[in-house]
Length: 67
Image 1 (cartoon, rainbow, N blue to C red):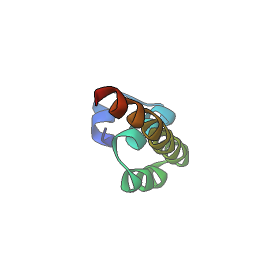
Image 2 (spheres, helix red, strand yellow; image 1 turned 120 degrees about the vertical axis):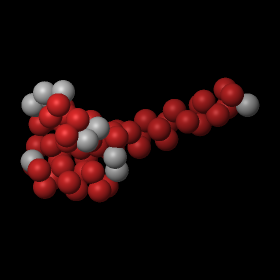
Image 3 (cartoon, rainbow, N blue to C red; image 1 turned 60 degrees about the vertical axis):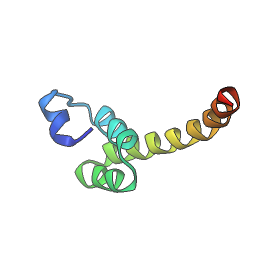
Image 4 (cartoon, rainbow, N blue to C red; image 1 turned 30 degrees about the vertical axis):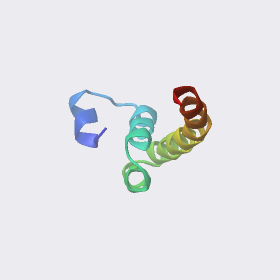
């Protein structure tokens, strides 16, 4: 989710903004979040790490279930 979209939706909490940017984008979005606000950058990094962890745990189970 881009910063402009979050502004239009009136999302003001930097934790929510950073978390959504970390989930929707990758390293470049996380780096930009750190430039905008340190709290947003931290939450973007957490979101990116959690996304990677959960994906690596869930995808093998889904692949076995689908095949």
